Image 1 (tube, rainbow, N blue to C red):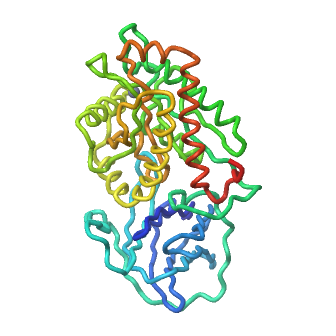
Image 2: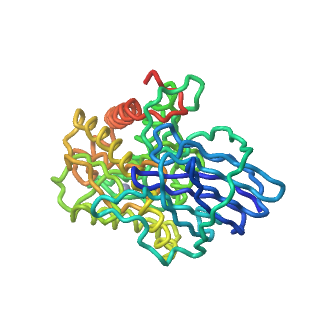
Amino acid sequence: MNVNSLHFWSSAKQSRMMIDVSAIPAHNISLINQPDRLVIDIDNARLKGKLAQPPVSHPFFSGIRADQKQNSLRIVADLKRQIGYESFTLNPNKMYGHRLVVDLVDKGPLPDGETVLDKPSMRIAKTEAKAQAPQKVMKKIAEDSGSAKPVKETTPASRNGRNIVVAIDAGHGGEDPGAHGPEGTEEKRVVLAIAQKLAALINGQKGMRAVLVRKGDYYVDLRKRMEIARAANADLFISVHADAFKRSDVKGASVFTLSNRGASSEAARWLADSENTADLVGGVRLDDKEEVLASVLLDLSQTATLEASNNVASHVLKSFQNISELHFTSVQKAGFLVLKSPDIPSILVETAFISNPGEERKLKNSDHQAKIALAIFKGVRSYFKQYTPTDTRVAGL
Ligand SMILES: [Zn+2]
């Protein structure tokens, strides 16, 4: 069996290692001290992909190495402090194959209200910790590009690094027109135009590259939208929408990030529902089990991603203040499915109310679409100026 990749997501108090494997392997996990490290021995395994390397500022890891010994693979995470861990395996779902998951937690007391992993039912194959002799020869694995994205990094970007990738998702499309304006303007058309203008701005910025999730008038399943962003190794996902409300005087822009605990306001909840039902329009019904699994994964993985999402959302919202009235003056949180990528900071921008006659006219106007695209772009650029992924080449943003 093959070990395809190792990724991790982290917050200050916890970290999740996710090892993608071709089949669930026989394995043993142990903690070794002096120096502290976590050792994962996997039988009959070959390392096929790269292992993600932690940034210097990572709260737990100083490095991740692998040692291939004939048929067994040993993965070693060098630790900065003493940790506790739990492990379990996950079966394939729509987005991922077999996975071996190791959750690490700081041994220190957790702050009030924080839980580590409160879903015991997920521990399908808890392994026994067993002390083992330290391995003498370890092979340093080449640095993987961009996996621990949510962890803030202050090291200056390398000049030869990769581009920052921004996935731009024009909402709706095809048989799902989205909201309608009083004059019949369809949300799917104006948001595609804005998304294309935003992509052009991003592609014009050195060190940044845009990926359009949909390039024309067709529907893309909401999960597929996240998959497209993931396949492009996106550093950020922006879903572009136009709002609607039964009262035509309601107007202004809003920026949303994902809320695990549900919508933060009645309006946000209403919106969350109407956006999520789009999955049915695309002909794919959400699978309940997968949703439960997804929510469990999100509990841990999204802590850091949410922080980044809220940050970029604040930048975009601030930038919007210059061109339009805001509907909500703070970042809103809602359960939009499309924002649920566990490792890609994601925001949803409701650019204006298409149900407001004045804003409908503006949304149709190419110059105003360009203004909206520029506002989003400026917000995104100022975010990346502050939080530059280490392996990118955007020092001059
Ligand atoms: Zn929409």
